[in-house]
Length: 160
Length: 276
Image (spheres, each protein chain N blue to C red):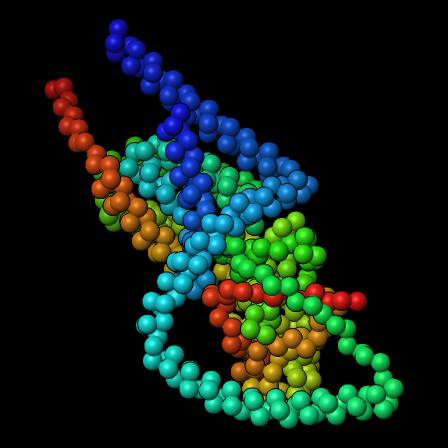
């Protein structure tokens, strides 16, 4: 139960960071979605339940405070985590620096593109700046989590 | 037996996870359905009320530190800008003294002619930024709302210049859309040439569109609000004309405008309430 409350506390904190801290750390007025990046990194590192929690609850909080139609952040976040779950299990059993950067770059770019379309804003190359910024943040999360939680290596020996 | 128990626990954990996911999706869909009715507006209001203290802490700590480091990188341009501003300030002081005289003279003449006070007075309400609701929208959430008698469309200024208008007003906070936003449209007038047009934001900067072709626009002339539409008072400074962009065959002129306000570093704002 304590773990659950801690989880919820950290997700609320992440949403607050998104609304308050990220505007301070903007690049040309743009900033990426911290919750989405966090959820993807958690999924890449196989923290499946935490990734779903962050994408779902964090997405709901973003929907609650944000200008985009309610449900967009939650559904988009959960769909991305589902997609990552499939991709990681099927195609990327080994995650490295470049793969993390590319995945988060693409997801951040897609999120930025859809947000701009929904908000009827101007499409521009700044999408790539935000996506790259997101990728850098993702790498920082990735290394932070791998340092905090060192994964135990499991060697599978198959039957001949 | 032990293995069976382990797999049962794992199964129940997995089941719980999917239950949470289903609940979240259900809440999102429910929210999506009730969103157009405006039911979520009070919840949004309380949400941003909760964000306010955290925002205060961040903006008064990190909000000061990051711009400081940014300034160090631009030290050379800041020094130049400072000397330019000092000389501009001196010029403006002499201009102000002259205009005070003109104002005094104007008041006397009005009295002589029996004019009533024509300009509607307005009051300013200070407001602070709480946060930004999206990284793709040029907007901020400010800490004043219906409780301070604010209305949708009210003008917001910073350092005497127009920075935006209120697009959503909740009980205790409001959404401010900056003039730099692509969807922002403000009726303005070029002060010297008297050309009227619409101020529009965008990634390329600020532009005034739809100025009639017969207007002789001067570079560096001030752009002020025209007061058309009634909500934004006339005479609020927006910026200066930097370039005239006219293409052959077009029936209107377009100018680019520069505002001295740094929109990424807004701190204290003032909402202008029009009285009467």
